[in-house]
Image 1 (cartoon, one colour):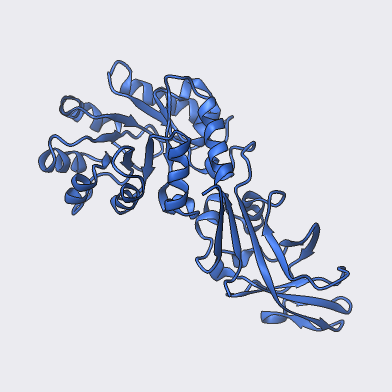
Image 2: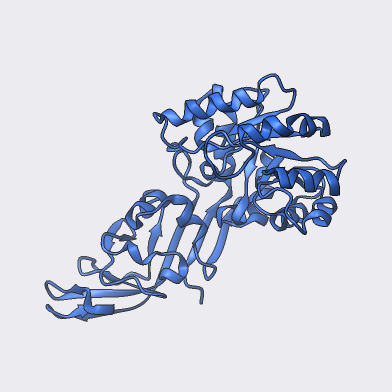
Length: 347
C-alpha cells in the first residue's frame, strides 16, 4: 500500500496560468516553468495540460529535462533550458531542438562554435549574482552575441516576492540599461515579477511557483492535497513518552494514531512541534518527532479513530506547511516523496 495519496489538480494549475496570463499585455507571452519535474508534481501530466491551455513556451533547468519534455509535448512548443549549453549537451540540444539560455562567455563560445545556426537565448545578470553575463562582460561580447541572433534575453529578480524591496527597481533599471534599444524579445519576470506589474513584463513572463498554488501569488487556486493512511491507534498513559527521545510526554491519558508518512516522504523533521494534520475538519496535533516513515498524532479529542488524515488541503496549503518547517513552498513541493500514489484531476 502506498504511503499516502497525493491529489494534484491540473485544472487549478491551468486556471492559475490563465489568471497570470491575463495580468500581462496581449503582446506579452506567458510561458510556463516546469523544471524539477514540474516542481515535483509530474512533468508528463502538468506540461500537456498547460499546453492545452495555451502555453507555447516552457522553461526547464537541464537539457535532460528538455529531452523528457520534448518527448512529452512533441515538436511544436519552444523549450528553453536555464543551464544553457554545458559540456556534453551539444547533440541533445540539436536533436531535441532545445533553446539553451547561455549564461556565461564560455557557454556563448561553446554554442557558437558547436551549433552556430542553432537558436539560443542569453541570461544577463542584473544584480542577483547567480547566473548570467555581467554588465562588463555583456559590453565586451554583445556585438558578437547579437550578430549571432539570440531569440530571447532574460534576467531574474532576486526579491520579487517582496514588492517593497528596492532591489526590484534597481534590477529593472540595470536590465533596461543592458537591453534597451536591442531588437530581441526580453523577459525579466517570473511569478513575483508578473505580480509587480507591466513595467516588469517586457515581451514574456515566465511564472513557476504561482502555477502550482504557491506564494507570492496569494490568489492562486490550491493545487495539492495530501492524505496519509492511519496504520494503528493506541492508548498511552499520562507521563508516557511518544517517539524518538520521548520528546513528547503525555500530559494526560491520550489516544495516539500512527500515520504512514515521514521525512522520507518530504515531511520535514523540523515540522514538529507545531504541525497539525486534519481528521476531516478537525485539527490534530503531531506529537513526538517526525521520523523517516511515521508520524504520531494525538487524536484524544476525536469521537472515533480516523482511517486517514490530511497534511495538505485547500485550507492548509503548502506555504503554511513550509512556514511550520522554517522553509518555503518551493522546497516543500519539490521534496514530496515518491512513495505516494498520485491522483490527477483534469488529465
